Length: 388
Image (cartoon, rainbow, N blue to C red; front, top):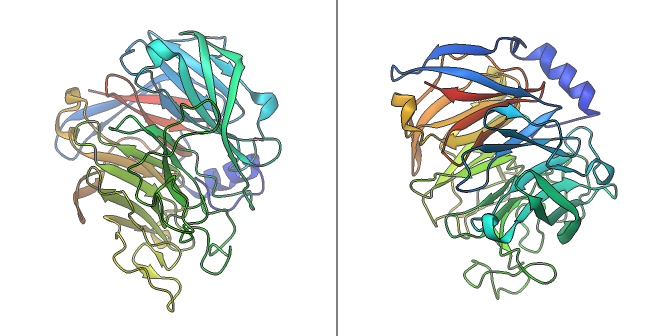
């Protein structure tokens, strides 16, 4: 998510001072979406450094909010529960970009009870862990099974997004290992198919130990390549999502010194796709002597010279109650705090513009629930739902 950090408190103060108006006190804010549909940001609760929201497939009564420090909190039928669904604060290192970063429920959660979390451990590795629920409102902390743990050489660029795709497999976003210019090995981690970093991985996590590599993954059987890699050439895909209608993959890849980017590929076209980092930051060449033939270029670029600092990927809206926003991708930026929308297709974005919704201080993430409703999340604490 964030680019360079000393501590969570310091970076929050820095960004709040330098970007946006920082005012998130109102219960609702009303704006005019470009296509003419009025929407509101309705606050559903206030949390401790929230970073993500998701839901169990088919359960429209609960939303699960991920807090950076290590808790998962439930809002059930519009009311925030005081007892967390899961509390693993004792296992989590939470500072700067580290913490409890991702959560995902498989399609069969209602019967299997399984779910997955991604966090920075006390050993500073990035951990993907399977848990089982004790009830819809409480996890069983004793059920933990580690799926994998990746060494991470720097404190930033940790990825953390977990998303079950249209194929029912688990997709995992990983950062490039941190630091500047991906200075890891001869060409950086992101271009190294022998490294799990700077990638989107695709796995079947349900195994007696570890995970299974799907036979259809693009690099299965290639010498020197890790079979779990699905896409590569990413700096820090902090938030990515699948269009719940078309299956398209949309990635918000956090930039370095100059450019933030949104990447888009149709359903299935992400298999083996190279998104260009480190030779390219957006469409700007960072390493002139390195090439990435056939890499996927971004459909949206935003520059730091225009106030952008850390892009926050969102969702293609499939909530028909939002009128003209339906079918558009919503996204933002940690510093600017504005919510933008665009119509995406292969190689281009149309009607890409800011909405008139109120600026959100420290816009850390978006979320989507089982009904397809979209949420906007502030690291300051408030979580909002987009409503007509």
